[in-house]
Length: 201
Image (cartoon, rainbow, N blue to C red; front, side, top):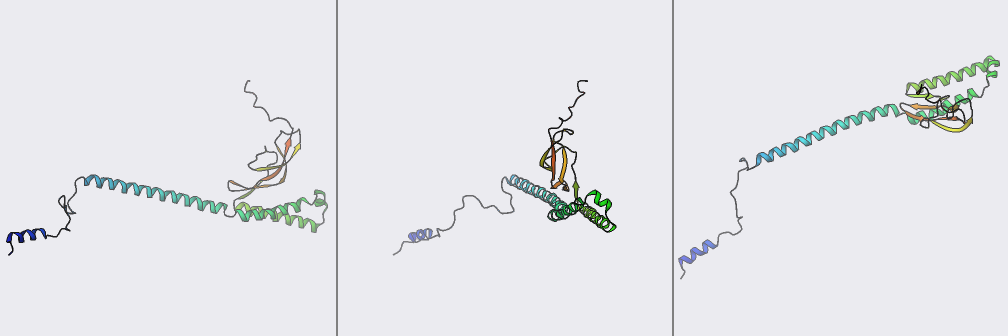
């Protein structure tokens, strides 16, 4: 015989044991949690910070792109310009090879040829200048290693030491940058640079 009380005990013990035990009451998603105002404020501040950082990065990217485009326009022809400088040098050498007396005493055919070479050189230099490439000739200036390359020294006491007295090859600038330094001869052993006198007077 079975005891009805035991049957009741079995039904109580046979309840499923796999159910989770809830230690605190369940909160509906639409109901605010305690401290949610602080969490939302923090989340809002983080989102605002991310947005401001993204805007700053985009502005930096725009400025960098503008600079790169401007540099590409100005300096994009650097390689081509360097190649063209050889042609300008050859034209100059051709003109320098004809002595001044020969030019004056030349027949009309030779004079026309010389004038044609001079005109070609001027046209080439004008085309380079239109594209931001400028020729510079530092004769008589103080030697500057940023723009000139010293090839030799010339003993010349009539000019201050360190003055460019001869230009072997003209230099060229492209925009604000040096495209090719001028090859120069620099004076040596001349007078010292004029002192900044009249201060005590």
